[in-house]
View 1 (tube, rainbow, N blue to C red):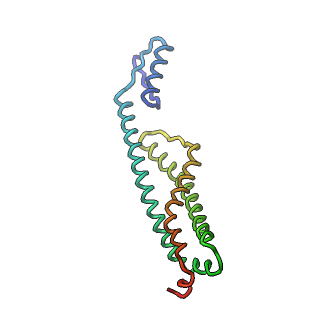
View 2 (tube, one colour):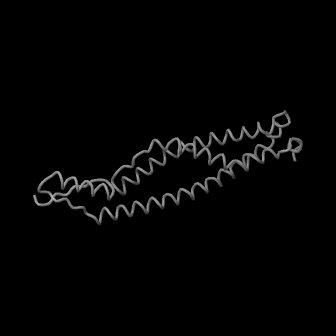
View 3 (tube, rainbow, N blue to C red):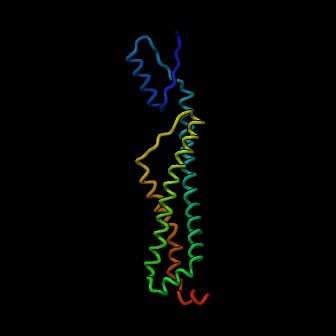
Length: 175
């Protein structure tokens, strides 16, 4: 044999260190990196990562708008229920806590569902494009769920504030 090719997954620095180890430890072998492939792959991955961050920020912003409008519709839909609760003696704080509790549950479910589906789709794309799986960073799971809940709560602050303005006398009269 005069040429043996092997594929090693890793970034540019890892491949350089692997070539140096082979050169040092194995006599008669001269390792050479196929730089065009590794450099272009690193370039594509870094640009793809930047694109994913941009898309993530845009999607988070749009999600906040959607959650805000949905919760506003829920508040308008439940005006009679809110008015009845207030007429029976519920405080504004109690009504706000009810709606924020719903927001927390929606954020929790959305975060868990987003983690599962996001990993599934990212893994499928990575396998089809780069022929390798992505790792699942389990340490980011709690942060992601907490961020999802926080985004949902922030999005619900304006609609929940509208529950405080509901006048029970007007709502119960049908106005």
